Length: 243
Image (cartoon, rainbow, N blue to C red; front, side, top):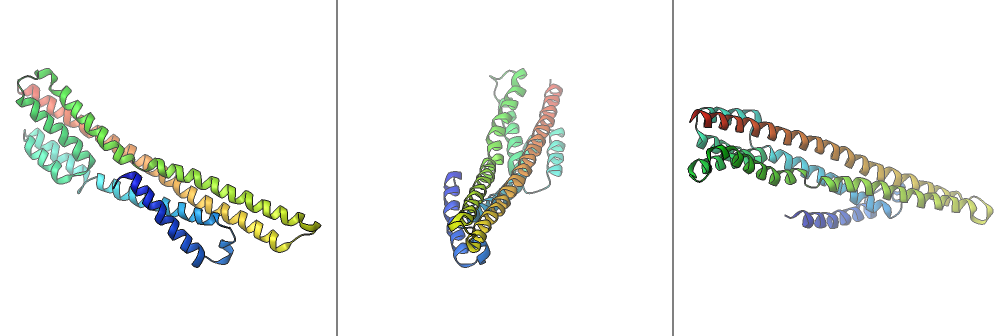
């Protein structure tokens, strides 16, 4: 499913669920926060949905088995000169790292068979294939991270807006007829505090998740770079041995 379509469907579903919860399930002291509570609930649902989506996607990007064992098996086969076995291991492993390495190995096989490619350009072609594969995989790893950051910012602003509206209502109660209207005053203060809390919950969750996933993606891409460098070194050394 495309990211834009997924986001649109999620927004509609989250709003419908939030409205139902607001009208039927929330205690009265929370509903005093006003209609902005619905938006804050919607944003919270979206945040946690994207968190689960990113956890699942990054787990899938690592492949089916241990990355350490996968890399060791690939390197062992390459050191033994068996590129086909290394490619088969990549096919079984799947995931972003396996895709990048497989792309490089397949390109290496192609240039070995192509008499028009000079020997000194073998590694250049492999490096280019790896870079192209990495450029395709990286956006998948970073997908929806900007959305998480944006939701966190919006949640803060909506919470602040609810706070301001609540304080306006509270001060309006104080100014009403020259006497304090305790009920309206309490409603205004409740609205301010409920929206503040709701905005902070969504914003804090989004910010923590965003930073966690950014570090996770950075670490994973670094692992890919290290792995591909190791593969290129092995291929390069074998190329010189074949001379």
